[in-house]
Amino acid sequence: MLRVQGLNAYYGESHILHDLSLEVEKGKVAALLGRNGMGKTTIIHSIMGLVPKREGTITVDGKNVINRQSHHISKAGVGLVPQGRRIFPNLTVKENLLTTYVKIDKEGWTLEKIYQLFPRLKERQHFMGGSLSGGEQQMLSIGRALLTNPSLLLLDEPSEGLSPLMVEEVSKIIHQLKKEGLTMLLVEQNLAMAKEIADYVYIVNKGQVTFEGPSDSFNEDVQQEHLALSS
Ligand SMILES: Nc1ncnc2c1ncn2[C@@H]1O[C@H](COP(=O)(O)OP(=O)(O)OP(=O)(O)O)[C@@H](O)[C@H]1O
Image (cartoon, rainbow, N blue to C red; front, side, top):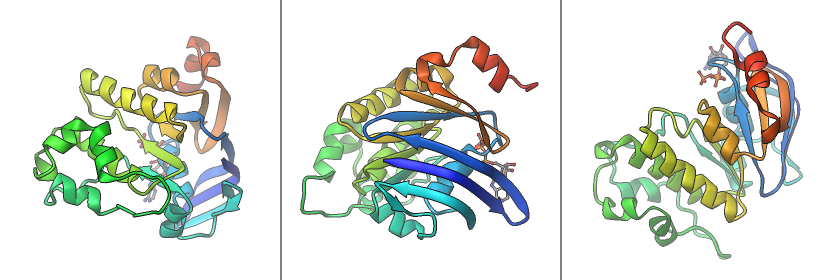
């Protein structure tokens, strides 16, 4: 479903990703782990077409999107739940959701379906986005991405800044989406959550994958070797 091969990405003169490759099979969840500043967001943004200079191959459902603009990539079926949620504080919950709503003929996400998944958003549909709690804003951000009807969902640190209870809520939602067959690439700092949800794990260090394997192969030793501050 997603295949990234030999990806290089740059911000101006800074070369951030170095010949990076990864894959996510249809219906599976892969986690991208790594310390701060190692390039995880840059990977997600490269897939979404948001990094100005990128080279290599990124195929989504067999289509190479490396040179496509982000709105085309969205149309090709890639949805993004960005780091920091990026909701519009001065629009209501419903208005926030409607910013991305794409009506399609076949069965897809609708406002009603989003409200079923997140009853809390239905209750708060007329509240301003800015008045929601962090957890509610995260649900809104996920709901908004789902309304683009993605076949691949990219989630950039969905648990960031949330209380343990809310992390559990968000985790449940991601599990449910997985059960429904949605393919996901998840950037997470919460290792326990990532390991629990993902089928496969990639660890990124300085723009390169230094470890990959099924999530049950991600153990204390791997963590020490690839994620410890001194590595
Ligand atoms: N817009 C930008 N312009 C220039 N450099 C950038 C830009 N965005 C990120 N970088 C640099 O690229 C490198 C990788 O950053 P990136 O945000 O991808 O890392 P990350 O692993 O997602 O970290 P974090 O967990 O902190 O979000 C860092 O050195 C960062 O300073």
